[in-house]
Image (cartoon, rainbow, N blue to C red; front, side, top):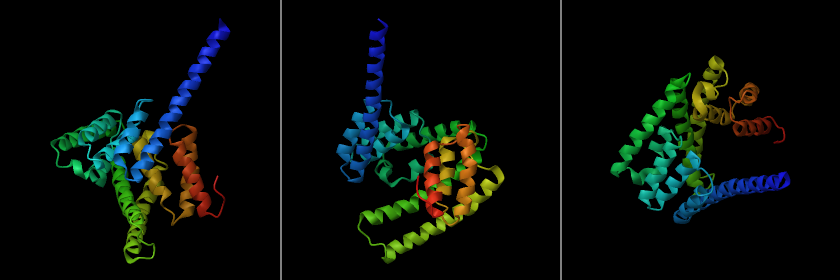
Length: 257
């Protein structure tokens, strides 16, 4: 009897792991096909993934972007509502994301904005430094906006040495320089800002600005050492930490891990 029970539990474990792996694989495929601009197929793949496991807020948001660009407006709003219910609360990203511009004229867009504003306010109320969280969100929006410009030009085949591309690169360097000035002051005053201080999204945004502070590798290394302490007490994201390790290694002439 025990042997049979063990066999059943073992089989269930394999099946669960298989489903989780399939979900991740399908989400990656959905993102890839989205990049290839086959939006209808991308939505189909996201929907397949969401049947296998509980969807992550960011994956639901990605599906909403695909649905919007694929002119599947009803599905786009459905995905956005699900994303917010699941925990997505990045008001700045939602409001400024070009992929969602086609939804702005729909009456449901205002409802979405109100819903995410309320969600963000609820999340901020739980945090130690809500105003800093909002500041980090704003910095992240600027960081990503200029990088999206760069990506869009590369997709269009614009050459690196072209005046248009050089202008965007200069703009990116300026944004990074200004963000680095602010992030250094925050780090000096508060140390590493983890989940307890600014929430998961805020901590990720803090890391993102550090990750792009390539003008000062020593500063990145100092943050990395401090971040390690927060990783040990589960107050920071392990994936972000791994990326910063590689960034520091590359910027200091070492091999990536």
